[in-house]
Image 1 (tube, rainbow, N blue to C red):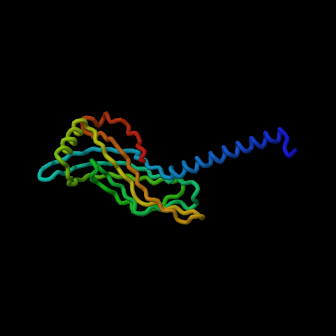
Image 2 (image 1 turned 90 degrees about the horizontal axis):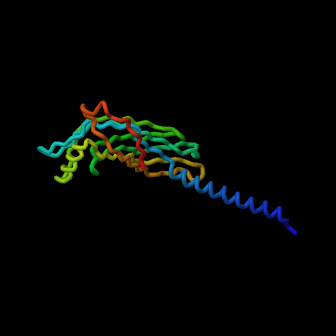
Amino acid sequence: MLCDKDCCRRFGIFVIILVIVLFVCFIIAIFVSHVQQKIVIVNANLSRFEITTSPTTSLFFNLSFTMSIHNSLWYDVHGAKYQDMEIACYYNTMEFDSIDLGNFGLDLMKTRIVNHSRSGNVTMNLTSNEVDAFKRSSETGYFDIEIWLQGNRIFYNDYDGEQPTYLSYPCKLRLQLITSQNSTTQGNFTPVKCY
């Protein structure tokens, strides 16, 4: 007899544990491949956001925000290189501001903080319906703004060499316009994860 009852039972338990361990490793690998990057808007303020329609439709804005870029990779000893990185701000699918971050490196499990504050104006091609929608948002005091982080991340491993990935992370914000009437009642900003 090659294996008694007790031996077969132990072998069966070993096979079950092995299958469970392999399954858990597979799930972790999938999870890690999708959580290599954490982008969060830590804070944001909108203190001016208005349009004029004469002679052209122009948006005047004063926006400040803090973005956290975290390299969540833990298995690549060389860290990551970021190339042609840019942050763009959109209202109603139209870009009204951008920041060129250029190229930079980020070691494993390290974070880069980007603080941005800018006032400006830009000509926008808004239809009359879009102008009406803007006026309705002005009445409520809340505006939907998207901040996108885009560019290329390259990390290196000893088996496959350089692994380039195109990054595109939208951060969807609903910001209350800060005015002299509500500046003292502004609540704490809840950080927004970008997906």
